[in-house]
Structure formats: structure tokens, C-alpha cells
Image (tube, rainbow, N blue to C red):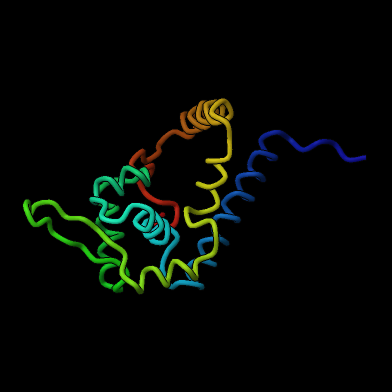
Length: 157
């Protein structure tokens, strides 16, 4: 009879399972659509809320506005989204999916938000609070970390 795994080794194993599953999903998205998982997520948000501003998209995806803008630049260059300036206020820019963007979304494997984001959304608030506390403690023990990484999508890191 083998002894139970060390708790630290088991936690590491579980992180590897999570990261591996996330990586596999991102690869499947890229293979099916030719864009990153974060780009598909942004497109899915725009499909649900056409005409969003970049700042609202960034807030919805929990990323920095400049990161959202960079995602949109790539999508616009690929012809998957278009930006429109407001008629009454030219400073207001809204973003819309193109027909090509809608077709790319139809090809994308589910969930469009990514498997980790989707799975976290399935957890109770109580579980998420506990998980957040435990992850904050883990991060505190890691020493030098770049907290700006929290504003980058996983597919972009």
C-alpha cells in the first residue's frame, strides 16, 4: 500500500492539470478559429453586447484597457471586428463584430470564455472566497511576483 501524496505535491499536480487543460483549450481554439482564446472571449463578449466601448470590454474581461485595445487591434487587422466613432461625440469608439467575426465564433470550441473562467463561474461565492484567500496566501509565499500579470489574459501570458 502506497502512502498518500504530500499535500504540496498534490497541489502542484492539480495546478499542472488545470494549466494543461487551459493550454489544450487555447490550442483547440487557435486551431479551429486562427485566433487566441482571449480574442475569442472578447468576440463572445461583443456578440452579447454589440457596440461596447473598449473600457467596458476590459472591465468585463478583467484585463487592463490597453490589453483590451491590443486584442482589438489584432482582431480588427484580421477583419473580425470593426470600430465605429460616435456621431455626436467622435471621442466615443464602439466595437462591433463583423460577419467574419461571427463565423469565427461559430467555429470556436465551447466555452467561449475559456474553460477556467467558465469553471470559476460555476463555483459558489463561498468557495470562490475561500479559493481567493488561499491563492492570495500562496502568492504571498512566492516572493517576487508581477501583480500586473493579473491584468493579462492567460492565453497572452
